[in-house]
Image (cartoon, rainbow, N blue to C red; front, side, top):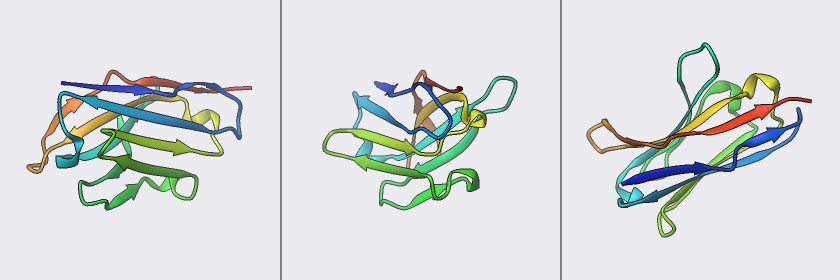
Length: 116
């Protein structure tokens, strides 16, 4: 079982990125999918989630500039972030959360760096 994040990189302030999480060895249709991020020296924090039923949550600082989506047929979950700022610099991780609320799987993360 693997979750593999991609789409990170270096972007200028005000730019956009589309992060993608590709799953193999499991069907994400049965899972709630979460995106977390961890900035240097800080704790990992939940930034967005989409349940198996399609309910969406965004942390306050991403509301209005982010879109999370899932494609169960492709087994992928994407997170589009617009108007990126330096404080968005972090490693972004994809998690699969089971029906029971346990985090069963996690990817290795993709680095997002926002800098001019």
